[in-house]
Length: 266
DNA sequence: AGCCAGGCTGACG
DNA sequence: CGTCAGCATGGC
Image 1: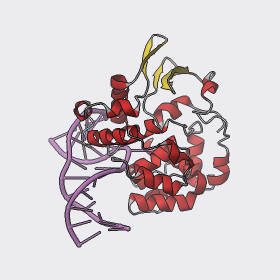
Image 2: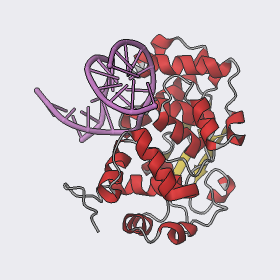
Image 3: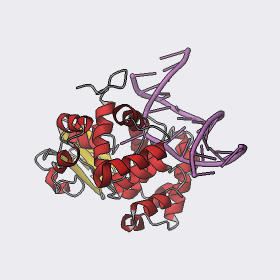
């Protein structure tokens, strides 16, 4: 598991929603610069793609778990992205009770409407808009994009961050404290906070529990209860790299490696 | 047509 | 503290 799979990591694993594939390359904007990534040149985004870390430690830590071993062997190219924190805040507020294709659509509408425009290889790309830019937008514009009841959540949180709430400060806090701080943002509950922490703040122990993960935790590990309770149990079970494991299990479950009775499909 | 989606908020106990 | 109804939208 030493080679990143760009399609899996940037698109299919649903941790990021703005990358687009055009004849074999993946186009997106990171830190205000447009990129066309391929397996050959992706080292230029080594930190973003977490390429410095050898993921074979996952098999050492979790390989004794059948579902984990299956997921590692089936999808060895998944990496956890080091995304901009603000981008994960917006993306996962929009993810609440929503499906991946529609989250992708909403994120791309936000970038096209408020982000800076770039062009690379004749393809138009849009950067992620700043908190200030979204804070100055009218909430009715968000509603018109199809955000539904998430529109006022995003609007209020953008204003709070533009007004001085520091996302950067969260990265140096312990997991529990950063989590508690994130819960003060409108539209951010336990699950969304865990996604922000895992994908946008580097907390590898953070274990987001969505409907897919809740099902697999019950079916594969016998853990039931509220999402908060399951998340706490999972962090105790899986430890400091549980979030990375979660991403593999999440993808395996979404790809149908579970039958109608909840049994792991080999 | 009807169920579902990387859940959250506010009310209530 | 935990539970739970209500919720906008559109993919499938």
